[in-house]
Figure 1 (cartoon, rainbow, N blue to C red):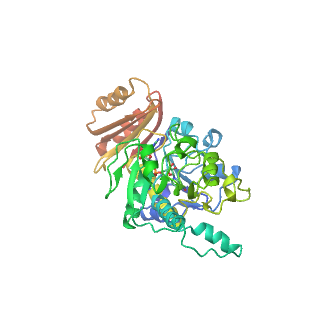
Figure 2: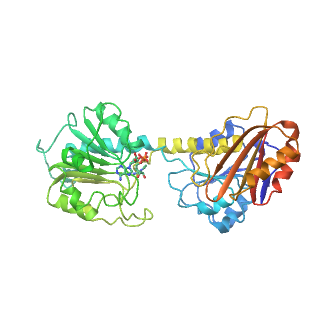
Figure 3: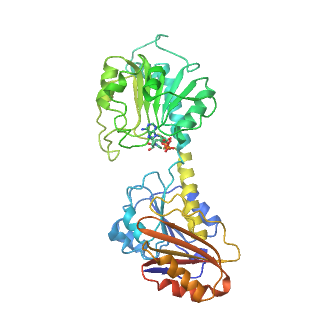
Length: 411
Ligand code: NAI
């Protein structure tokens, strides 16, 4: 069991930000009074990492630092982890949860960056620029208007009308495109967009098709050989979502047979692990395919947004206990606790614990002014606001309740 009983002095709370997290994060922390910040431009070697995290309360990482059970055994003070990126595979989410450590990320901070790239690629592909550009680099002069089109009036079919899909739809309408979309959920159509009757009807009626779905069993190879038969001749295909969505062999055949005018691919079933590894793909031989190395969301602006978004989530958790959008933890949206002490109690989710918590309050004659409970199958999170005068004694009693993982008192 871990307890955090030090007085809530923000300047003493150690924050560790690794892997060159954007300076926007440090700024947000300092502006809120969290000035004890350790930064590093790279991931740290194991021993140095252990040493640095021994007394750290909040940790920010990107994709390289592996948060394993072995490492967590050395981080008894750690209260929350921020992944300053989209993915959270580098963190053992089960173990962090059981230790009462919420993990946050920034799933949507790069939405605009992806949308802009896709839009730019659409314009270039409709004009046949990738082919003409590749030819010019070889000394060939392809001055022709054949297969060269404006975006205005063309039909854009968006598969997956979520954060990125909707953003692209709005931008594309501003270029004069007609937008239709297919989504498994009922989605509100923005602007003049309209829902397609079905996935295949979208494929059959779009000039440009762009995928913006997550990786799920349903989306795996959803653009396969059969689906390609439903695509109009001379249409354009883009995928900046996940590498498993398009069957690359089927795409290769559609390009080989010149059924497609062109394609833009940013994500692949198998991607190099580093910039030193060769990128292998049968698509490399096609001049009319824009190949980008999974950089749809990689812009300075997105990095800055991620720095702000994740640090704000960590600060909110530290100041107020809110776990909204945590990826491994019951989500509690909490209002401010003005003129009250807030006690956060994390425990193994077993029957009777809430009753024992409330027994502590009633036997100490404490009036609860607000109480919030969120649970998942493994962990319970109870947040209770009480009067100032009574909190220390109650806090000590709460720590002793069996199955308690962690308690925090917020002033
Ligand atoms: P989102 O969760 O906001 O939207 C996804 C949409 O797809 C949802 O509306 C959902 O209902 C829909 N969907 C799910 N399964 C579907 C199916 N079988 N058929 C049709 N629609 C389906 O996600 P967001 O932020 O728009 O991201 C979309 C994709 O882009 C994700 O796969 C994400 O990983 C990827 N991405 C890629 C980046 C890059 O660097 N290339 C950067 C950021 C995101």
